[in-house]
Amino acid sequence: MGTKALVLMVFGWLTGVATEEWMMTTAAQRAITGSCVVIPCTFNFPSRPYKAMQAAWFKYWYYWKYTVAYSKDPNYKMSTFVGRTDIIGDLEQKNCTLKINNLRPGDSDNYYFYVDLEGFEDHTFKEPVHLQVLDAPDRPEMLLSEDLQEGTLAYIICKALHTCPDNRPNLTWSQLLSSSASVITESKGEASTVLTFNPSHRHHGQTVRCTSHYPQTNHQVSNSVTLSVKYTPQNTSVSMTTGKGKTVSLNCSSDGNPAVHIFNWFKISQGNVTDLKLLGQTITVPYGLEVEVSYYCVATNSVGSSQSLPVQIPTEYTPRNTSVSMTTGKGKTVSLNCSSDGNPAVHRFNWFKISQGNVTDLKLSGQTIIVPYGFMELSYYCVATNSVGSSQSVPVQIPTEYSPCNLSITSFNVIKNSSISIIEGNSTVIICSVESFPESNLTWQHLNVILNRTSFNNELWLEIPHVTHRETGDYHCVAENEHGIVEKSITITVESGDSGEWKTGFIGAGIILIIGLSGFFIFVCVGRRAGRGKSAQSEHVGRYTSGEQSDKSKEIRERKQETKVKQCTSKNRGPIYENCELDWALRSQKKRKFGEIESNHYSNAHREDDIYTNCTFDKEAVYGNV
Image 1 (cartoon, rainbow, N blue to C red):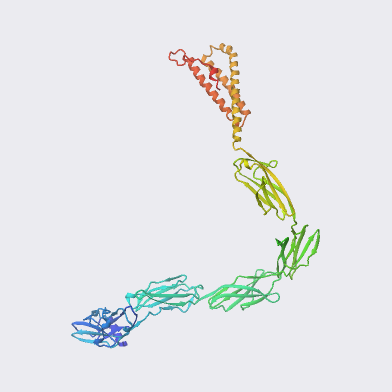
Image 2 (tube, rainbow, N blue to C red):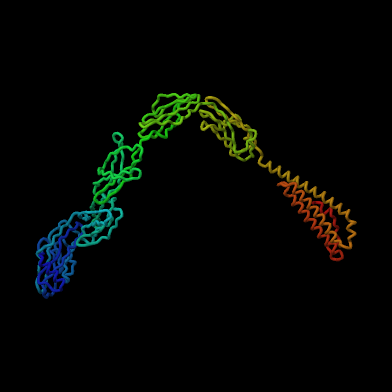
């Protein structure tokens, strides 16, 4: 379509004034085999009156025999398009859009539009629209900014072919850290989505993939881009290797995009920082002999800079922390190892033996030596040497072999005269321990039967979880190694579980009997004294009634009896006398009750309804069981 026609069409739409030319607007389309295609189309014509409007689409050439769709007769079309095509645009609105379903490869061709204005004239637009039918959809198109920089928001656009409303593609993204995807939009034969993210050095080099899936035809295609993000240097660090002579080589490494192009070096000595004015990635510096010196680097690219942590240059020192460790070897030998920390590293170890106060140079220079057990006290030490000086370890004594000694038997129970007493049903543990080298074989024996044994740690436990009378007897612990044997025994006695309760009950019953007899004798004594005082009481007959006299005598007897109770309980404190005071209290209660009955009898003797009239009060009988 010419520029002039396009301008006139737009002008006509905007002003509402009909054009004086025939015009059609459409665009070439691409679609997928088996899917559909919608060919958008609009047209215009000179402003003239007409009775009706009909339209048709032709394939290949504008002849009726090549009719694809006809608005007046939908069945009038080429046999290959029957049931597959339709003009879906509103012709009265000058919309000539065509839809073709179930596309075939042979549908690829040029298509022409024809319009018939009845009562005016008809017109065939000589400029065709081209349709290309694809066996499979194209890969999605991905659009990405060329300059991704850390900290600046970025977008990736994914576009996919979309010319059939019945087969809308579903667009998905691969995972990307700190990103979000927009909803799918449709425009001009394409479906698109946008992925938004904030680039960082972690995104650099990552692959982002967009996949398009067509559900109607089950096609799936994808495309990808690799991210190139500009970021400041990361992971800047200094590594150190020993150089020739007394020097070390320092290398500064850093990861940046673009690559780091400047390395600056700095020295820290006694808290002061000095710029070395050195720009290389690797520098060589001397050892610090006494003063601690550290170095760090700064890596720079076009985006920014990053500083490493300081690395300390080692100072030279004589060996220190020199010591000897000992492990048991094969046979009757021990392995001695000399360890020491020095800079430069220790390069020589010398060994010495101490025997009866004499020191002997063994002329051995290895870090580890093997020596036999000694049957006398022997000690060894080592001397570690580097280029700066030497350091001597503390002597380590080699163990001497000896027979078992100091055998002892212990228990959680009390041991008295090599014997323990266990109540039947309880548990007990007896432990046998001994000193020897090498370690002894230990056994527990009872009635010449071995109960358990061990050859580890010079200690053996014997546990009896439930003691019965069958466990009564002597238990022997025997300790033996290749140099001798020693043994010791302990006796276990078993007591019945209820013997203690029987003894306690017997003692308690005896005490209660004694208390009862003592009460009886006290009562007899009190009664006799009361008889002797009878004459004295009669002299005061005018002063007291018979009831009052009885109360007075009872009060005197009770005070005496309470005195006896206090003497009993204070003298015999303890669990077995705890019923003593209670017994006297019961006797007092009975006496008070008798007093009430006797008093009522005397005070009501004149009454005919006295229930005590025929009662005879025998004090001895009343207190006979107390």
